Length: 421
Image 1 (cartoon, rainbow, N blue to C red):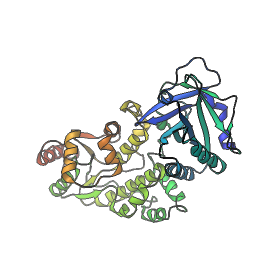
Image 2 (cartoon, one colour):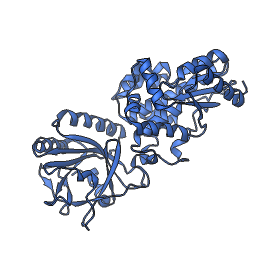
Image 3 (tube, one colour):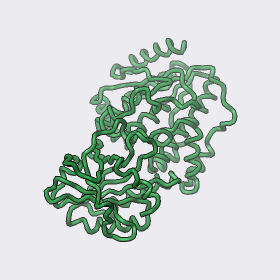
Image 4 (cartoon, rainbow, N blue to C red):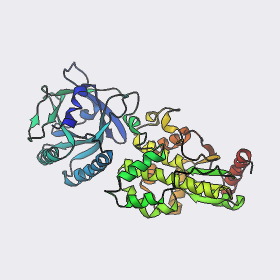
């Protein structure tokens, strides 16, 4: 076992383990003594012939390489594991302790697939930064034991005769909330820039992105004209509204992410969250630079901005029901201090069934996140609530179900009241 893996052991019994099943987290813990606790739900549905394993990717000092390895590990497991093996996201963390989160995967197979699974996992611990555990039941199925594997042999290594697996209550904070800041959501130009710069040696496109970034040496003056951001899920009428506002107000219309990043979006959409989110965070600063220039000449309408970047990232990182999100007033909802703040942010909302109907009528392809919105109600609710909780500036909600002209008139009233246009 490596020194990095061993660094987790002194507080191993203080850790909580989370397994994602059907989009919701289920928790368990380990103890050196079993006091008759219930079998965790994760193991209750395991059949007699099923076998369970966990693979945790312990963090190295280079978080770029850790993030890349975590994503590549999933591809490897999906490719090389037997088709019957079920793979679920997993994490281990110290409750309410920042930077204690260790991500990985939970595997469930059966006696027919255990040999190929164990050969693959044995190979992993010889070469890769992973900590592998197996889980075995007692004869009555009422107790489960966790065993850590050694990195020098394929057999299970008995550590203190194994740890008993016990149920655990949900922690006060969803584990991912301990890891959101400057990982899933970026709150400064420098933090996002640092990630993209470190990607230069492994992702050639990162260097091209860096060349597009505005200079941070000279801060631009505040625009003379108002800046209005229109937010909302796809098919809520953003495009129609932004075009109408452009014509009505004689404004400049800017998309976010900016068009200059379009050649590389598909490339970075394939990267793990840390890298993908840094890419889109930098896009906001490019958009802010464009706002600074155009806002000296005309009003500016922006189709999405930081609210979208943050809301989707938070809703993706935090699984389960809305109550798992960081509470209102949390720092994760605070606008970056070095990013331009618009004069007004309008959030278009729409009944879910009506939005789906509009999407079907459009017949256009959707992003992976929009696909997720359609089949995962919990994800949609988390996105919508994250939008509402972002502050500085907060969103002003507008019902997008009336006709396009009525929605336009509503928004114009808001603009005239807030921006004096």
